[in-house]
Length: 312
Image (cartoon, rainbow, N blue to C red; front, side, top):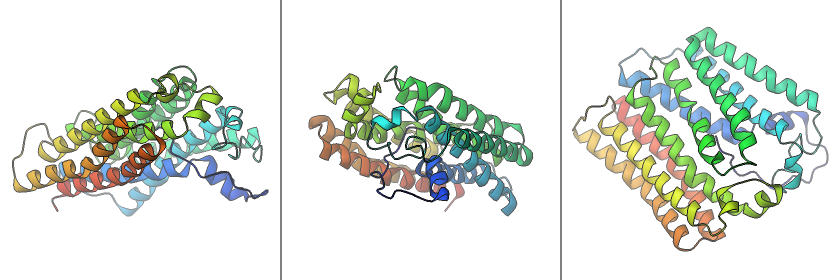
C-alpha cells in the first residue's frame, strides 16, 4: 500500500468538509484496492466454480473494504500530520494544513475501521475481516513509522498494499492456501516496486528534506531503485503467467492459457522497457515514463488474468 502521487496543493482557502474527508482517506489508493478486490473476488468464484456474490454481498464487500482502506489512509495522515507540512506535495492535506482537527481525524479513522471490519465479518465471516485488520495494522503501525527509519519500508508497504486481495478472494469463497490468491498477491506486491520507485525518484528531494528513508534518498544514484523496478516487473509478469497457466498449482496447457500468458508478458513489456531505460538514464523524465506505464499495466494485467479465470 505504498503512496501514490498527489496533486499540487490547492490554492483555495476553504475547501468543503466533504472534500477534506475524501482527501483524508487517500481516494486513489482506495480506488486501486477496490479494483483489485473486485478482480480477486471474480477469480475466486471462477477458479472454484462457486456461486457468484449477490448484489448485497458486492455492496457490503466494496463498502466494507473501502472503509478499512480509507481508515488506513486517514490514520497515516493523522500520524504524519507534522511531517506532511515539510513537503509541498503533502502540505495541503487536511491534517497537515489544520483544516481538520486531530479529534475529527482520529474519529473518522476509528469509525471507518470499526464499521468496515464489522461489515465484512457480518457478511463473510472472520477471515476477510481479519485480513483487513492485518492490512490496517501493517500499513499504519509498521509501514508508516518505518518510512523514517529504513528503505525497507517499501517492501512492507508493498505487502500491505497487496493483502487486500485476500479480502475479496476469501469473501467470495477462496481460502488463504490457494495458488490463485497468492499469484494475485504477487502481482500487486511486485507492481508496487516500479510504481513507487518512480514516485520516490520524482520526489526524492522532498522525501530527503522531510527525513524519509527511501531507496532514492539513501542511494541517490537511482541504481538500486532501477533494479528493484526491473525485478518487480519481472515478478509481476511471472505471477500473472502462473495465474494464467497454473491457477491451481498444476499447469493447464490450453489455447486460452497460452494466449493470456503471452498477453500478460506483452502487457508488462512496456513497463520493463521503461524500468530498463530508467536504469540506464535515471532522471525525472524516465522515472515519469515508468510511473505512467505502471498505471496502465496493472489494470490490464488484472483484466487479462480475470478474463482467463472466468473463461472468456
